[in-house]
Length: 200
Image (cartoon, rainbow, N blue to C red; front, side):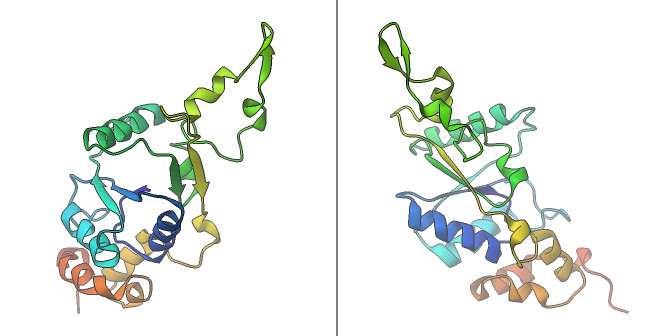
């Protein structure tokens, strides 16, 4: 999973829980790691890492990612794969996404149901059977198929992180219903006062 998690909320934890059940190693990459105390990114990467640790302890690996101004999905995915490789982590075999928009950045590298199964049909060339060459971009170096899973947040009742930040801004407690209780203190204590509506 790659996300800003500003803040970590129930839709994120649902996705992470599925990933933990499905995968040998669950990696959560925190985007916009260099940003902090901005309206769109109020919590630091350290605070967001702590939110994850409060819920998952050592059941996940956390990797901070800086915004690199990627001009293309290929550039962004290469940056992620290089970062994981430098940290000694295996090349990912699965990517979990909360939306079609987010998934669009990874569709060229992870197999999804939207891709024609004809790529996995071997064809005869020169008397032997060979794989379609277009297939190789969906395989790891070990030959495992990289899979893309989309659990679309548009069908979820959980508010978006933007709506949760708006709740904090408006000084109402709706955000508490959609975030883990173990994170309530870190969320409220580190949300900048200047982002909240003034008290009359």
